[in-house]
Amino acid sequence: MTMSESLELVSATKSFGGWLKRYKHHSRALDCEMIFAIYLPPQAETDKVPLLWWLSGLTCNDENFMQKAGAQRVAAELGMAIICPDTSPRGTDLPGEHDSYDFGSGASFYVNASQAPWSKHYRMYDYVTEELPSVARQHFPLNGREAISGHSMGGHGALVLALRQPGRYASVSAFAPVVNPIVSPWGQKAFTAYLGEDHGKWTQYDACELIAKGASRQPLFIDQGEADNFLDEQLMPERIEATCEKHDHPLTLRRQPGYDHSYFFIATFIEDHLRYHAEHLQRKR
Amino acid sequence: MTMSESLELVSATKSFGGWLKRYKHHSRALDCEMIFAIYLPPQAETDKVPLLWWLSGLTCNDENFMQKAGAQRVAAELGMAIICPDTSPRGTDLPGEHDSYDFGSGASFYVNASQAPWSKHYRMYDYVTEELPSVARQHFPLNGREAISGHSMGGHGALVLALRQPGRYASVSAFAPVVNPIVSPWGQKAFTAYLGEDHGKWTQYDACELIAKGASRQPLFIDQGEADNFLDEQLMPERIEATCEKHDHPLTLRRQPGYDHSYFFIATFIEDHLRYHAEHLQRKR
Image 1 (tube, rainbow over the protein chains, first blue to last red):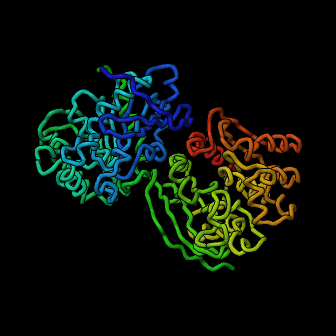
Image 2: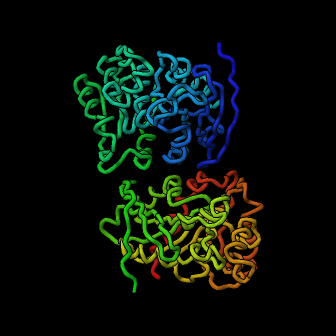
């Protein structure tokens, strides 16, 4: 049984008739203080609403998506709450944790680390799949229906969380996700430190590997900019395309000419994703 | 006769089918290097388009509005270019210039400074009314129709530029503008340094004073959040309301309950402003 978690309100900002709120709380999974953001649409004043999880990418925190994606406008129309967790534990000071943009703080890769010293704090998989959802259920008017999306490292997180938990999310989408981190330099760097040399652990956090194992057949919806600087070295969408083709996994992969890796790309197509999720969130289970 | 200005492209990012471009150039008015941003909608690929000037507030540069307001979506639909100038000269190092958020760099108040040492660089009125428009005409497919808007200090700038140049802008609007800087602590601090003790100069950069002088009867459209932290001390919308009432100046002032001074407020209502400007920009002169 979970005791009611205490939340400290950091800020509350009216946005498109609803409220963007930031909260601080102590995370038991991560053993540190964390801040997350939630957008509550106007409908949440009177009704329970469905929830979209948004997982952000490297260097981000809970703020980037809410400030730059322009999602609140559509979420307010659709009556959808959005939660943005932070992208790693904070306030810790592990060796090398703050030295690189692609490792440590801001770069959890949403795994449960098994290697010291990371294993004490870097348990973001548990945080975003269990602890924070529990907190959210206790404090906000949510109807229990969830969807998930994310960008880059967070797109990886969204795909992995959905593929590992069949039936949990009504729908999953991603922008420019790291679809095959075990062959991506970003993923290899993070997984080596967080998970060690046991590649069996790595494959549990790799969308392509999870698809190949066939645990779930949930459709995947991905947007990828063709002018993305990280396309060939880190993202490699052709790998998930081939894997889905081989294993008959439903995939909608849209290649968007001219778009880069930035929030300008996300802002351009976020409405499509929100409407996609709303459609699935409204369906009967 | 003006020679063609050379522009250095800093970045080009696809956004809602158009392009957000940032350029660096040498400003003669400001005697320094400046960066500005322009959003070119998809229609600019084949046609000349109207232009909205956006003047940002204290601490901002050319980037904040383009990242946070969500304007490109609507500008792309309406076929409207947007230029965001920076909010002050840059790269200079005058005494005290970088010490305060509300003075010096990031805080030009869009005046032509008359006092040393500011008068050598702080000539933002000339920059945004003459030099940058000339640069824009030379380099971008603009149809010559202009409108203007801005936020806070930039809302002040938009109102002042429109009131001082009757007939230039098809329409003017503002978010949480400093409507009466000669009685606002922000304005008094800036005007004292930039313009000296001659209050006759101050009144040329004060929307309420310009309305009272009756130089123009151009309608003003203003949105003001009622939960704005700066409402009573700095913004004082009741002053422009009373001035417009007294001098029969057309004003639409919308007080928005619960909204603060942030870009979340701007993002919520920017679509209304862009559609308002588009309607006026499409009219025959």
